[in-house]
Structures are given as C-alpha cells and as structure tokens.
Image (cartoon, rainbow, N blue to C red; front, side, top):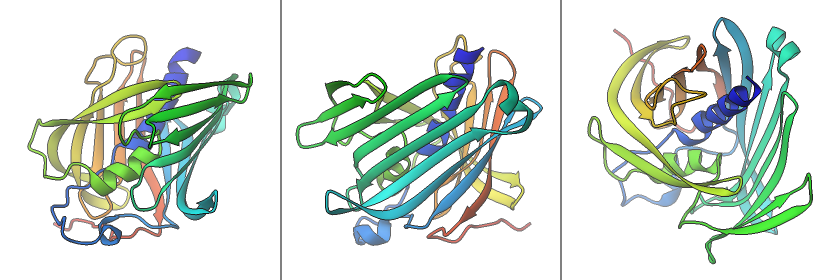
Length: 270
C-alpha cells in the first residue's frame, strides 16, 4: 500500500506541475505579454482519497535570483491532514528556479517524506550541454545524465506549457507530449485532448478543457486511461480538477483557493 500511495503523490504533483498550457496564436506579441502568470501567483489544491479529505498541496511563484541572474522561483508543498496523517504522514517540498523568459529550469529540488519513504535530490540543468547533474543529498552520490532539448522538471513544466505549448489549438482526441527529466530518468509524457466542458465547481460553472493523461495500468491505476483532468479554458490555463480510478479506490483533486492570477478567472453564467 505504501508504494501505491507514493506513486499517487507523484501523480498529484504531475497534475499540478504539468497539466496547463497555452493555445495562443498571437506569436507576434512580446514574450512578456504571452506569459499567463506572474510573481505572486498562488494556488491551493484539496485532495480526496475515497471518502477522506486526505491532503492539501500549494504552489506559489516569486521573483528571485540564482547566481546573480534574475529567475522565477516556484515552490510546491504537500501534506496529509486529519485522520489520514495518523497512518500516512506526508511532507513534500519541491522547488524549481527557471528562466523568466525562456521558461526552462536551472535548479530543481525534491525533498520528500511520504510515510517514511524519503528522498532529497537536487538537479542542476545545463541546457547548453543537454545535461542534468543530479545530487542525492541523502547518500552524497552524484551523477550526470543526458537530457532532451528544453527538458522540464516536475514544476517548471507547468509554467513552460502554459506559456508556449502547443502553438495551435488542439483538435478533439488529438494528443501531445512533453520531454521531462525526473529523479534520474528522461520521460516523454503524453496527453489526449477530449474537448471542452462547462464544469460545476465551488467557484461556479467554469469552462474547461478536458484531457486524458496516459498512465501505466497495474498496481496503482485501474487502466491506462484511468485519469481525467480539467484545465480552465481562459488566459490562466490552470488545473481545476483531476479524477483517477485506482486499482483500489479513487482519488479527486480540486482547486480550493487562488490569488494573484495574471488574467481574469472566468465564470460562466447561464
């Protein structure tokens, strides 16, 4: 069960950190105007596992410097709450520092404790050499790995996709993918666009784009197409709901709170 829960938390961070993107065709406008986010943006997500209000995760963006260079700094934090915390305690910290114009990561930190399973990694990205230098702070081991062009980490992908990808509007049932580097491995993460839907939420009815991320069926997920994700179809492109059918039970993630969005948060009125 602990292995299943660890993989569920990876899914949750991927839901927060990968599944937003821009469909803007306005390539003639400046890069600054294209970016659908700004320093000060903040989200809180509520996570339900079966009948339990199991966990919360937050994601915030700030202005920072890295080696004297201005960057954007995203911080992710996740924790279990209430009864769930008694039998499965989670304290997850994620940081990414990325270029404020190209939106590619320079430094990524993953410091997690999930029911006694711990990991403390730092990844330095060298995009000129297409290398990721990984430092395991728990055992002081280091290694370098080849990466694809514009490879993203778990959090920077959220901002990169919102800003740049895809360049044209997707057709229903069309798929797209992104190159990622996570821990010690390269991944090609694939999603299918299912169309649009007006989704009932705590904020009101929100027009959303609906997606099907491809996952591996087996011990955690019931089938390869067990996960459904809704992204706001507005200038922000933020995850507002995720549902997943697991091998045992189900999980649901909802946007609970937000502040300092760059674009208006659009609510549909009948």
